[in-house]
Length: 126
Image 1 (tube, helix red, strand yellow):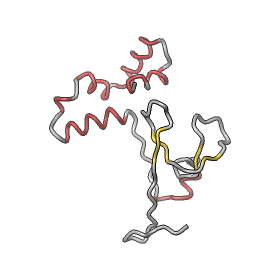
Image 2 (image 1 turned 90 degrees about the vertical axis):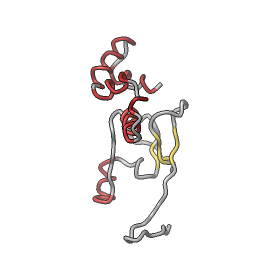
Image 3 (image 1 turned 120 degrees about the vertical axis):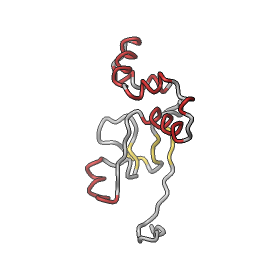
């Protein structure tokens, strides 16, 4: 399949994303043909760069691909946008404390709800 080239001669391909969680929260996944996973993953893999195993993706796209991941991204984005528009007053101090000391808060949440920290980190998103 042919894709249009940008001014630098790189192929341009627009990717659409979808939520796979019924709550429509959290991670977005690239839409593509689904393939049977070889491992025990929560979601099926797709024929997209996102759906590839990371070691294969690195060899395929090399210096042109960047995997950007941000822990606690929703909270960080909210605080950042508020600061950029000089509206930090709209962000509660407790949210800023959660952003700056996430592990402490995750441990408190885990203890309060009798869950593992890996599960507790999802609770603030509900």
